[in-house]
Image (cartoon, rainbow, N blue to C red; front, side, top):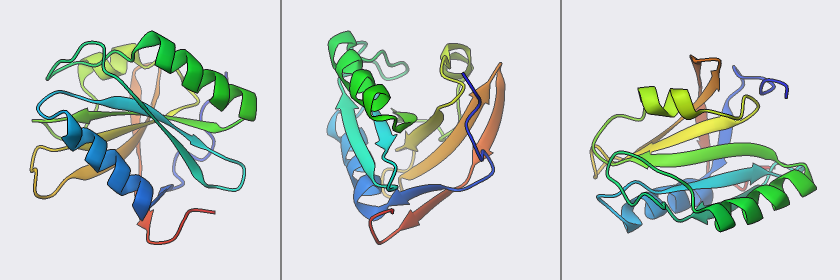
Length: 145
């Protein structure tokens, strides 16, 4: 697999997708949530919320059947992969566990933080061989295209 193209290029999120990520993070608070995004060739995003099989405040494990179904669609359609999860009580930075378990070098890893519940944040990272590079997130009010 090749590393993600343009790691220094902003990760574009339309306002609707940003809102859905934050709503998903809030939906099972204080537990972490997780899921996938697939960027279509036209730039729009497909959102795949996936149950956290761990149902934990500190870890996540995507429910295998939901993960397989989402990954098949993303791979079959050739979407760019983003993997997201929430941090409910800490900053939006990859933990040592997040870094150790990062298995998709081509993916963008998004973290939604609810550390300040009134001011949620979403940050993006590229993780390759334990090295973490932040990718700026740009939120637009229009559908990404």
